[in-house]
Image 1 (spheres, rainbow, N blue to C red):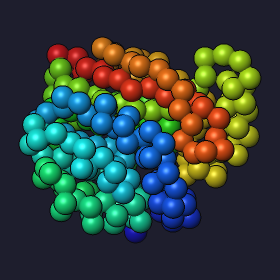
Image 2 (cartoon, rainbow, N blue to C red):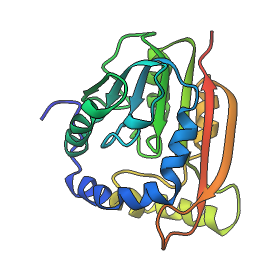
Image 3 (cartoon, one colour):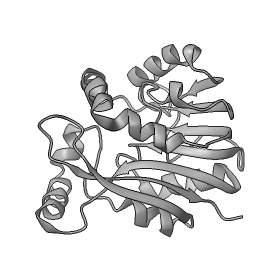
Image 4 (tube, helix red, strand yellow):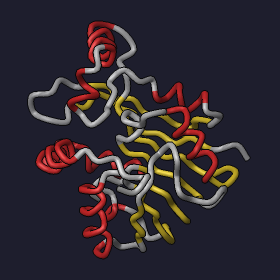
Length: 214
């Protein structure tokens, strides 16, 4: 096993079975909004099976897609040749990106920071690979601000049930705050409820853009 591999085959197979439904229920449209106007050399952290590849605009001159899970990475490698832009799929984790300093114009995270083992370290790595003034595009689910949903999210994380079942995903992360604390300037952050599957209640999601220090 390569050091950058995180093998979660059961989760990967489960995700591949439900990904189509999630995309049809709105995730694809969210990803389109996430990528609107993006350009230059782009890194996508936690690219999964490559669901975003066909959505990148032609202004993107190259995409490096980083994925640690071997099953999902194989799907991404199969999807890459049909993308409208050049795509290179590589192994790596959010906390240790195998990329040079200041090598990207933009970094994309799409439902990824919830499952980073160390969210602060992952954001520090993203900041490292971004050029000064570069963009962080983020699409993430986040902890509810108040009420029973917030209490339930914190309880599920606290006892470790949801992270165990969902490939390390955490329901109670305040990712918008974490991005700001990592030194990014948040230029936009749209919060909305989204139910990714038919039997799921809506949970808060964010689509936004933050900029690395110049």
